Image (cartoon, rainbow, N blue to C red):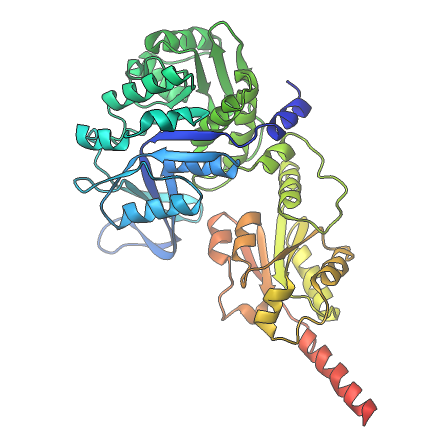
Length: 491
């Protein structure tokens, strides 16, 4: 299938409902700098600067699907603790239906804490209870399963070996989905794939497939036989094996088979790439796409997320851009989807991205020098600009002097600016995280205030630069001079 047809397929995916059953994990990141060795033991001392919680495991699958505009329902288990409540709250905030999740006071919420210096993990600490969920809580979790399956376009079993998927629970889910004619996709764990008997397909990575087969896959020519063996063990319709830099291999009984090569790009972090793959496969199959097309979309999405830190997700706009869709003739003033297309194109071409933000009300020479400095820190410069309401909240009722449309188009006319996007929040945190620039630029007057977005940018390998300011130049001083001159003229 050509890239043009794949783009058409993305546009026709709709918003099917996906049911996820599996292990919920809270991923915690503690980032900072290692500058010395502890005097107490020969271990590095991490000077912590930032902490962040994200959804992992089945939760990351859910977030991937929500970013792709799917309706999502999750069945899983958390502990009766702060971590469990936080995890469920994060899922709900992402628009995920968690009414089928249960709380087990006898086990902690699974939590993985990664300690990171720069771009390097120095330690991971796991809190977990991996024993299989008891029959009481399994029955509680699967209560109303038939109705949930019948309103789903696909079911995902997300098995991280943390106990949510007991053998009895897996069999119950597969049986219900089979009776409803709904495909079941399994992200497997362990050696015994007969546990997933009757599912539609499994998505092991190369190492997992070798573990299940009991032998190594030494040559890519062995993949057809290996896939057939996995299919026979679990009575599946298909097997999809992710191969890292060698792409994805798929084999379907009575259907297509082959290997989709990976797209060469910088690999920053492979965490969660498998979640992205199964999310795209489920979404595409729920929309009626053939397995071959689903695998090609999944491969493209995985190529995007490995360039980001931690468990990440991808949007349909980013997929379209990665498949070669031109950003169009919208000019420099853009919205979120248009900017996503541009970002994907620039990153595909290896161009570094600089970002700055401000009100830019009455443009003056100080602004021009500042933007020229910002542009010097990247191959392209994106400018985020406060909309009128946020300017009024920041500057008072008399501002802005110029409306958002005028301010955006004046900025877009400058040769050093590649894209201008408005934001309505009081801080640029959200838009900075959307862009994840290689360079974040603010004026040197922010040195002691704390640059919003610094932690996010540095955590993702970028740098923060403080631009020198041209003394005596500011929008406020320009406005004041105009007002003074007007008062003198009237006097």
